Image (cartoon, rainbow, N blue to C red; front, side):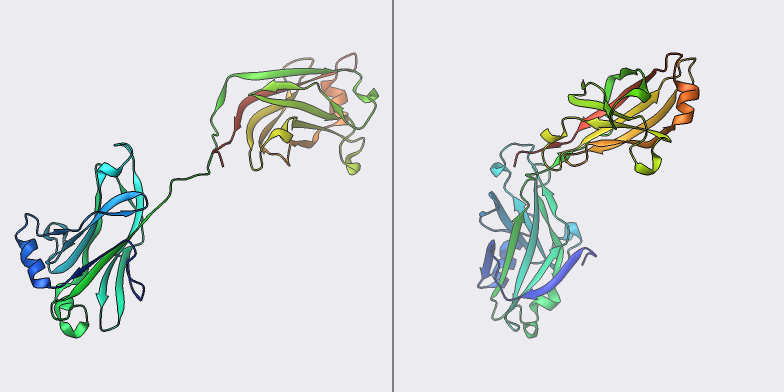
Length: 309
């Protein structure tokens, strides 16, 4: 028995299909006369598809099942909606133990993919023939016995999301925002005009004297805000990679900070409370007229996609 195979006893009878045999010896002779030594049950329905149970009374020699009861389940390919359809299913095989008045239940812990290329899965070593044929063990009595199978089809997924971290914009998208007389701006927060990138609406928030009380008049805070987050569905996200910069008016020594963030409906802003100190800003990044230029460069904007409910 495989390491992934589980064996137990249960009182409830098989729910998908049951094969009650009145004379096991005759079944052996019937199977022996077939090409592969197997017996094929009638078709039965489970999970919206047609199946049949396959029983090897003397074991499936081609699958290391010699001297065992071997059992399989086969998907009727004609019940597939398209040739490329794949059906994942769990299956349990049963052998009635009349002595215990319970069913020996054997199953693989892993679901199996059934398709047109492989329509049969099963267990070659369900029960040793020596154990099965000994009347003292309770599996056969006066030639009578019972086998069965449960097929549980896994439903196709109905809810999912696709999150891509590499959906780069065709060209890195840059927005510049010149800010004049930064320390004369009234109000705690100064916001840029809204702009659209990657199908979303954004804005830059600038706190000239810091956004935290303890940083007041010491640090400049800058944030990138998703201005249309209220339109997002619950758990929908916008994955963004960008760079916030304060441009150097005298050269190329720009101050750049990266933004890597999954924005959502309740978390629409991300940035730096201490982007740059006010002293450094005055000495390095303001031009002769007391103005500065902020720049945002977007590299990736990707929105998670959900199935319909």
